[in-house]
Image 1 (tube, helix red, strand yellow):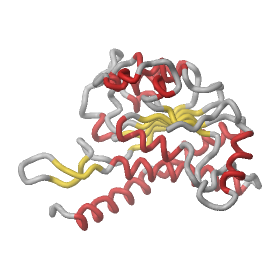
Image 2: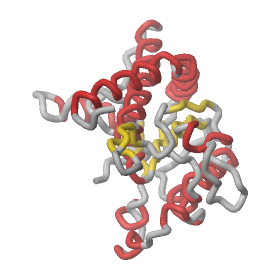
Image 3: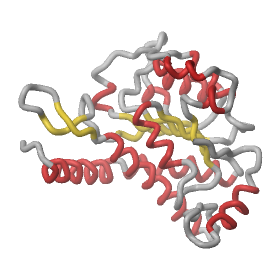
Length: 251
């Protein structure tokens, strides 16, 4: 296999198509959970660490996406709480189960009907597993995005021995290979990760299915316009006011 841009594009395109086709049933199941949440005036809470934070950014607070959404981030205890900046320098922060409790406590006015979406390629680190466990203990629906090929080949870093996919009501496989990268290197290993692309695809597929169902039922979905077009701010502000105190937009 060549190591160049066209080869990556071809590999990525094939992977995206495979994920789109194989995960459609799960996407529709995830959209159904989000629809129940929307009908109950709930909020979609999205979380991912490392590069999986990009998935949460696809779900929450972007043009063309749902307004009633929150992005949960490892930075929250510093940005929204009282943790010092050096809190983020802990190399084991992502692996520490205690991190999950600090993050959940900072979610604004979380309600039982809120649905959670958690992405992790490995699905094994302590913070995401504990966060998922906490979400389920609180009775929330949970959509998981992970690499089934990767997660089934690594041990859990959570004391329970559980992995993220074992806790999801709906589990979407991002199709990434073990180690995430898709182009083999001559001396061993591989380059060019794929999970960010496929996770973004899955996020937008879920949104498309959800919005299609709402429109078919004669509803007007609460969707963001770009803030960089005329009247975008006014449109978005009016919708955000419906969820005042329950959603936030932070860096």
